[in-house]
Length: 313
Image (tube, rainbow, N blue to C red; front, side, top):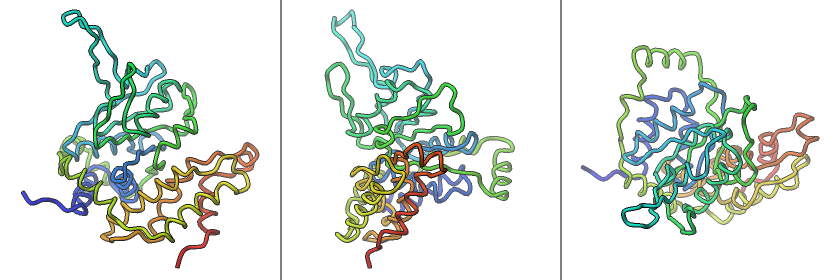
């Protein structure tokens, strides 16, 4: 079998997922950019728009391990990380890995778990390791979290704290598709769900090669400064209580490198940075109460910043 090039890996993944997810090329592009740049994704959208299906389609497209955790109020950190259990035969504690020890983790309805359980993901998402029973345990080379939450239902939920939101490289939704695409969805699921027919199209090694190739994409000092200026501008905008962190600048740079590779380019352009600015930066901003009351949104702040900050020639 011929070795796939990084751009072929992206194209095969995109085509495979589109067998299930119709009319969402922009969202798929962002999702794959996050995975290829060592980021994690928070999908926030209305029920029934395909958030969970998207995560499952990606996992099935890669010959890798996949675990799903349904977050509920009674979920404990040990239910995610794992626990040491005493073995009578050998008379010692043996660690039993939790679902976090996987390649792709679907954290479904993450805001239904308590803040204590949500925080169990912080170390894993930030450092690709977990500390359990006083011992550090590394996670896989490919560790990708796709979390989902419903933005319109608040009963029995716990809003994600700022530190947790900052761990997600991107936050975006799928939205409603066009009428024609929705008819295509009905036709595809008339007899069975197409996700049942999806099989892996790339190997785990292919994805790791893709991630390495992303790091080789060049980005000029001028564009690095442009990214820093975009993030920095949010810190002084009216109505913003907490602006974007340096982690936002880093995530934007890495994701833009991934998009450049997807576009068949060897270097990043301003257009790729602008395409990702809202999904990478907006969810990290904390708006003050007066701005919220007046209808101000973090998305509008980032869009305004994009208009004001000078683009490098």
